[in-house]
Image (cartoon, rainbow, N blue to C red; front, side, top):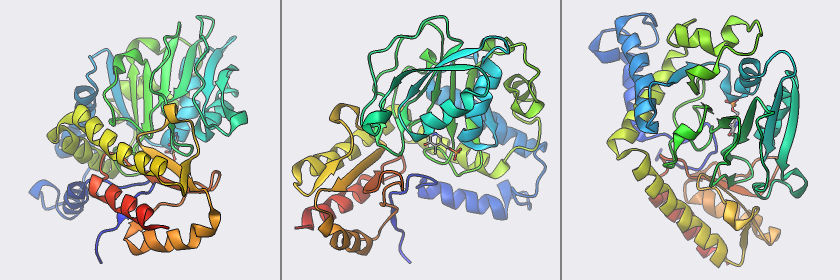
Length: 354
Ligand SMILES: *Cc1c(COP(=O)(O)O)cnc(C)c1O
């Protein structure tokens, strides 16, 4: 069975080296005669994994010790609740949110359970085809929450607003994909399974000084400050996804870090978008200026070609190209591990469709 060209939006493609090394660690971790899956998370070997998995994130994102790195369970979806729990005061809590897609809307829904939520910009009425831009966020808010990349609709924030409050960002589907100034954020979170590892752990990067100000009695497992005090080992952490995430980040560091990944990601996206723009059979769902480098959502203009196109990409060894059920069409996810050669194969299939 030859390896497929995996365009899945998540869980998704990872470097082949990561699959290999994680498989080896399951059988024999570091020559210890034990599997990674059977050793104590408090053993010297695993503590070293956790320490390095936290340290490498700060190196790659260029962050000082003002920031803490956590690997938590519960998916990015749990962060939709943990963020307001930890940042919105129990009395008169008020946060601003940008509504740019399905995940942003889920974050808004959870935020409302903790206080007042104002939606300062939304493209919902236009089926999330763009990123709202002209809004201001004043200091009457406890924080501003945005989603850097809209995995389903294929839009991406190219710039982040200067806000007069804390800047919180869900970067699940584009963290480590482009060189931006990460110090502008006070809290970043990302489910691992889009661009940094397998499902099962969520990365949280948080500025320590913003915590402990809500007056809430936060349940232990939902309390960032407690997880920081316990160095992300308050309870048994998801050891395997953390280890595989570490391998992915080590691979990224070895291959030139985020700046080099960004250059590769730009080349891949340019290759595919230029074919969509050139080819009269295809179009994207969203506005050009907000197109995502990570998730290219597009459709056939003439739906009678669907069967022929679907058969052709499947025959070319492509997998995971179907669009999200809420949008339809197609979605080619071009995460860091996607080689440009696979994108070229998709482009060839599109060019051969007549
Ligand atoms: C996938 C995704 C989520 C949800 O992640 P889970 O880990 O499944 O909870 C949240 N936000 C964005 C932007 C995503 O792409």
